[in-house]
Every structure is written in C-alpha cells, then in structure tokens.
Length: 110
Length: 113
Image (cartoon, rainbow over all chains, first blue to last red; front, side, top):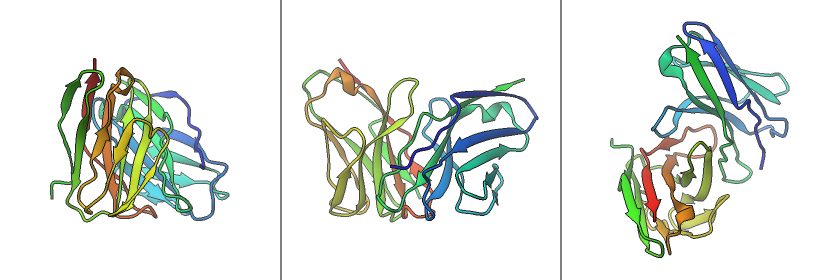
C-alpha cells in the first residue's frame, strides 16, 4: 500500500496562513491525493483532492509537487474552527483500500 | 438526502456478546467501508466493499464480519465482543475510489466491558 508521511502536530496563529505538508514518495501516476480533516468528536470530512494540478476550493488549496512525491494543504487564513487532525491519503485504484495514517494535529493559537 | 447513517450512536456490550453496527447510505454509492478509531489514534480500515455482493478485508479485520446484500446497507458484525474492540466506529461511502470523496457517518461509540 502506498503510504503518506505527515508531521504529528503543527501550530499556527489565528488569521495566518497554514501550510500542512505530506510526503508520498511511492505514489503511482494514477493515484489521487486526498485531504480530510477531523474536528473533535466528529467524523472525518472531505477537504480537497487533486491528481496533478494545484486545486482550490472554498476551504483550502492543494499544492502538488511537480514529481507528485509531496503535496501541501494550504489554509489561507486559519481560524480557531480549523483546529483539527488533518489526514493526507492516496486514493488508490490499483487496489481498493483507502488507508488513513495518524494525520497532523493542527493547533490554532488565538 | 440523509447521507451516511450509522446506528446506534452509543452501545455498551459485555465480553462475549455479539451485535451488529448498522450503516446505510442513500447516495447510490458503490464503495462502502468501516473504520475504527481508538483514542488519540488515526482511523484503521476494518472491511470494505466495492459493490453489492463484494467485500474484502482491510487492515484489522479479525473479530468482525461484513456482508453487502444491497447497495445501500453495509452492516458490521462483532461475533464475540472483546474489550480490545472498544472504539469509535465510522462507516464511509463513495461513488467510486477514483477521484471521488468519501462521506463519513457520525460514528458509533462502542464500549466492551
């Protein structure tokens, strides 16, 4: 199974941008990169996903390295409500498992 | 649409009891899966299904059974509950795996005494 590597935790100040890194050096050419987040006492929720090009939506931006071996989730202006665990996962289509790692716990400082 | 519905929200079992966690989705999704999450940990895949009649094992399948007789439902059965199965269980579904997002239920908190 292709795996991702993320820092265990990160801190950021409120109203500042946050860059959450993810390494996926064994990614294959057809694997999508997905990001989910889990707020306290809730189930995970979708944030964004992409294949090769950078992606933007109302929640965040996803920057994908040219060789696709790493990606960065960008929260443009963090709020206290963005404090959560963020998971970077690969949507595998060579088998059917979606494996979550431990994610990055993001702390937002007021 | 209700999305992904899990029942019950909370359950307490005694060691050795069996029970079924229910998961239903009304989005006509082909892919469904079960995860467990222990305190302070990430999600671990238990079983998954890519369509009615098809199931397969994930990372931690021992002690759990699944079946997929309809597209909508994907129940998770605990055969003989053990304290090690105390966890929060999440069901998820997706239209497909390729470039589609997962929708999660709100979870079932299970305690085995």
